[in-house]
Image (cartoon, rainbow, N blue to C red; front, top):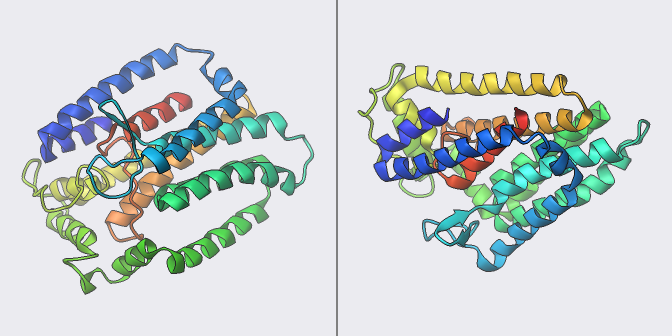
Length: 329
């Protein structure tokens, strides 16, 4: 997936491709080193509160020192030297680690559902509050999905799934009336042709690129990468479809389907509860994020503004995806 994404980035812009190559090299070296660290999971589990505190602190720092690599848009990054760090990417993984470790270490054999929800909701709620205030609603949606899956695995109670569905539905309805960005994206999703040159410009250009791709695509190097805005990041999936067509889209979906299958098999075969929850949470995070952005850019879902794991340009996104893969392996 990373190789396919890298080829697409070189096609879109050699500058993006070269920078992504450097990040990819760092990720591969880190992956090889991490695979030899047999104490990695015990360290993550033991010091869960430290990792959580650091991640939340970094996220809070964006309120005071946040910036954007593009110079416009939400200030969700911290600039350290010449590197842009996105704390919300780190917070995703850390929240999974914390929930998996806490539930594995603290939950007794017999418990009530509220014993799980009360302490974990405080942490998840704090993380969600930061993201909602920053209007990073795509990442907030991922947090809810990860939390739901991990708590369900720990409790085994189906009514929790119903409770989560009702909470998510209520949050979506409330968010529509509170946040103008949600209204814009929902309206653009329902009828993008009302304002094709304004608010719906991104999704309209995405639809045009996908239509141009057809079944077999226009051919590698024969697309029009400048047509789709943010093609290197959020909208890399339409760029792939334009040049490789429906067959390319199916190929990407199948890759994530394999990742889903392998991830949950690893979870089922885990030697302890911590690894079980961790594998399930990581798989949910990677696949949910992929589904959100693939669905958003093809107009199956409202746009959420997240990246396509392993494919999209960005050091924080790539490092987080590789670290998640390391924990799975």
